[in-house]
Length: 69
Image: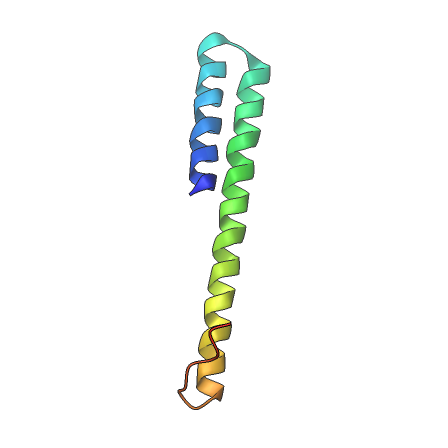
């Protein structure tokens, strides 16, 4: 969720930079938005990898769920 907020803030900064002609504000907004997109994608990959690992553990244990630690 925090990455979505950072994307929105970056987008707003970028649009404000375009509207005012401030290239530095536009560039910093674009960088913030892209950084948040990258972090969000990395987080999604991490969560999917955990899910796949849990499913593999369940299969290896014969259908029994793993310890909830």
